[in-house]
Length: 346
Length: 258
Image 1 (cartoon, helix red, strand yellow):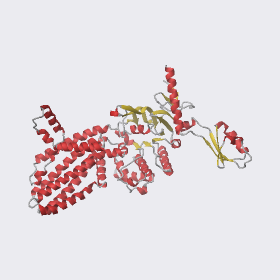
Image 2: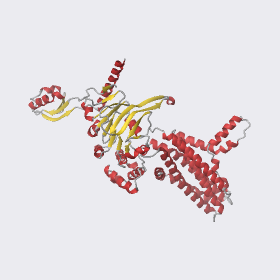
Image 3: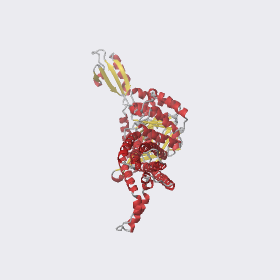
């Protein structure tokens, strides 16, 4: 079997996938909550639908029980397609998937699964309380249970005061909260959230993060898609990166950004104009402040220079790559690997 | 069945909150106007005119609701993506379809019953006391409801695989063709080949025969409707609607949502 490092600079056996996208790291370490095997989705298009476009290609991955798993990728990468396949909203061209050991074809699987669609939209003629009551009916809850859960969920997502307002009067952020409430209403084992932070203000984002962390604390498994790296870093045990319908790698988020550290950045001010440190020639000035970027190995030397110059250090931060940069590196590394395999094969 | 009932009651609630039943105001005005006008211009046949007008209005208003809302039952949920959260619950797709169908039929039943009441009030205005034969109006209303249920099933089938606009066209087309199903069966044209005749006859049996539900003329003239005919029409509607809904469920069960 051919194994290759997906990203340049990857350490150890982290971030390794085989040519078919199978994840090596952590394989077989605990019970999988979600198992996906060679899942592919093609869409017909063009005149008479004679052409096909691959939206997802041989996706193989697993999410372990109790993990918070971030599914990362740029728009159109295949994140939502994967989630829709898991939720049987669309059907795979090939491949299989199981959630909690049950095939995704098995409707009873949904008893233990909660799902928040991307940019959710609900029946706008209903109030939040009515929507939650409606969805709770499908889980066979009694009227008292439904009411109790509905009240609890509305409180959790901060909508208890707006519960009697029809959803047509809700903002996008409020709808997102309703979506989150209906996803966790029945206390599911596995929660799948498609872009849960989308449309939320900073407070709302924080509340969603808290809910995800709370779910993790309760031992629930959470799979959520995002293209915001900071969300993944903050919440995830593991992340999977998907680009162009192909899984490019799986690993801990620290490994993702740690792989390609872009060095350090120091923000400082000079107390006296006369005493200038040598690194000033490399710094960028904005008003009274200077910003300098340097390799991690030079950090302590630079700090000594600034100390000697009696500079006021305002911030020292690790330079992290943007998600797009990580994506591009992953894609290029994958292409390079594919070419290498091709050449050695010949 | 709990899932079907939950979807059905929600569909009914949707129709009520989206003010579908407001058409009753129009019907009430029509009946009031007719009762006043008919009393003045049609001496001796007031009840016939009122019954004909009332049943026609019940049928046409119901037809509009059945076609336009029937098509929207599935397509609106797909377009607005309200279906996503629902289908991620332990709900079979056929349960969703059946629930939606039952919800709209419930709406139509309430609507039709209210209009029937309005019709009786108008009838009472021009003729009281009412006669025993006027009870046949209820039979005609019941058969109209059966026809409407069949149209809802057809509208749902079309909306499962095509756009709303085309689904409306197809449903309306099938309705019009279904009105002539009986004629197609008995057609005796000299210039048609035997093969064409056979084909036309075959098509006539595939089309829903809406003549089975048309007793308006007889009822308006105080003639009774045989119980056998009502039973036959009920069975026909039940079987035909079941086949159409099963086909819709088959198509919808593998439909990829956007």
